[in-house]
Image: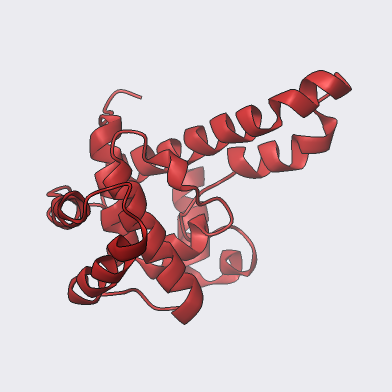
Length: 172
């Protein structure tokens, strides 16, 4: 890709998107893995808290609520200092990239897809070697490759005015 962000920036962008976009959280739900956050363990903790809150309550937590949850979280999770987690939350919330831009969406999509494919392979490497085949995990690989959080999968949206307009724009 011609316009790529660093993994450090992408990790912050993913957390910012998690903080602001319920549809994004819903789309990544089957794939989410805190191991995506290799550059920043504190961001991994923030993402995990956001994701667990969303899964339990089906709403996005606000920053103040997250701060309170982080306080409690750090009492039982001492592997990452509370100050680092709070600083990572602030850094991610201040990401100054318009996440609705196509280049940002494409970078985030690729980031999620690549991280998931990597972990799908590494988590199944031993079984792949034992069996001498990848057949048993092909469905997972295919789902990862097709991952998108773009709206308008052809489905029934195709027959809406926007769906047809999008189709004709693509054809032209």
